[in-house]
Amino acid sequence: MELLKKAGEFHGDICGGIVMGTKLAMYGMETMGMTPGQKDKRLIVFTEIDRCISDAVLSVTRTSLGKKSLKPMHYGKFAATFVNIDTGEAIRVVDLGANKKDRDENETTEELIERINKTPAEELFEIQKVSVKIDPNDLPGKPLEIVTCADCGEIVMDGKHHLKGGKAYCTSCFTGSYYHVIDE
Image 1 (cartoon, rainbow, N blue to C red):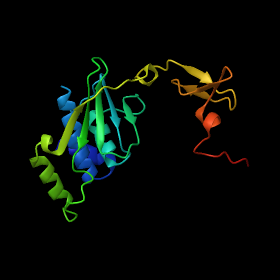
Image 2 (tube, rainbow, N blue to C red; image 1 turned 45 degrees about the vertical axis):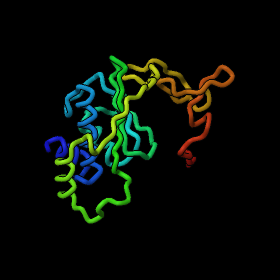
Image 3 (cartoon, rainbow, N blue to C red; image 1 turned 30 degrees about the vertical axis):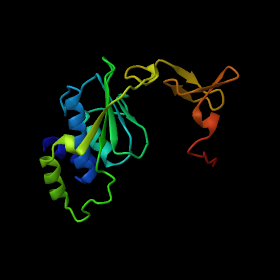
């Protein structure tokens, strides 16, 4: 319950995604032989959805974007992959009931917490042994590559640049951006 409380505090409240994400992250770490709630430098976690569950995974695993140990994948699925970068062992934990239409829509958060606590993790999640290839630029630590964009002059790190005609370009200049600079 302590990890659930911490995940809720980080997220801002305890909702269904935080409850399921906390249990999922605990199960994933325990399956990997790691201790939930404790930082483990061997761990990289790929989350597949940018919703509440990812905040719970971040809180329980103590991974982070800034340390390059949390990787959001934007697949829209209630799943996370846990990778031990020392051994290469990897498991994907999938929430079996997240998108079922027969859920009790009237279940309160308290009832959900109680139900999830009483239900063995094996009944809530599927574990898949997987293989994950991680680019050396995506591993924790100092940047391996730092270049300057030939067009905008901004710095691009971690091999996220594109080469064209022997010149390096940032993604914004190479393929377009999510933002548009407004000249004043």
